[in-house]
Image 1 (cartoon, rainbow, N blue to C red):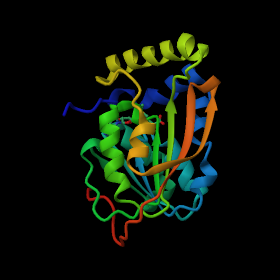
Image 2 (cartoon, helix red, strand yellow):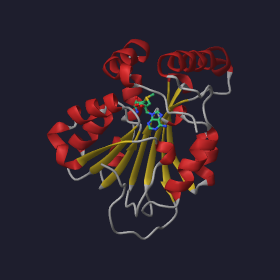
Image 3 (cartoon, rainbow, N blue to C red):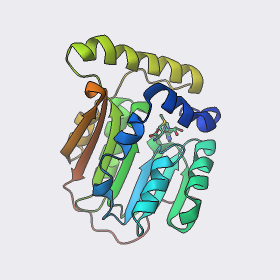
Image 4 (tube, rainbow, N blue to C red):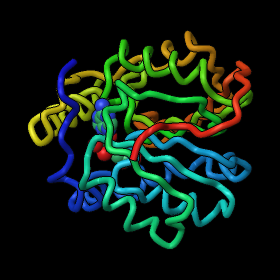
Length: 226
Ligand SMILES: C[S@@+](CC[C@H](N)C(=O)[O-])C[C@H]1O[C@@H](n2cnc3c(N)ncnc32)[C@H](O)[C@@H]1O
């Protein structure tokens, strides 16, 4: 397995890069299904980066506890700084999500905002399979992602933008992946069902709610880590 990308030197700039390139749209996309997160008690945030979404979710849902996993120590310290007012409800784990060990998880919410695009389809399949067999019944999985619509806009605009993003992030972070994974295939195969989807910028950005059909009786802590 290749090393995960290194987002450390982008942590402080990330928010400004995002605002400069996509304005408010990525944040709109992340928060599109905030209401669906308000009844959750236990969330697993994968690759949440600088924690703007995590901090907002902690503010809006006063009972939720969040385990945040990211490979980047700098991103995790920004996340923890933003989440500090609710520090008792967030735990951070510096780890490669591809080798995540879930011990008796009780998560009822999984969050992956603009993270699955750092993985290949095979890696998303493996992640979804391990999560699918190990979450609460009815667990929701919120996905925000880039997408390439199959129309003229997709071919002429979205595809070159996604291509350019992969080149830039490949250069800046060492990210090896060069195309969007088929996360629909991966999540469906793992037993998740697409419940809702919204699109922005003519389909370049999508936000989705998936639900787990499985039932996995469990009662104790989730991740093992620091
Ligand atoms: C493109 S950024 C997205 C950050 C944030 N979720 C957002 O909405 O903008 C990807 C994040 O995933 C993390 N990441 C990438 N690959 C990873 C891996 N294999 N394991 C853990 N974290 C990873 C990076 O460190 C970075 O913080």
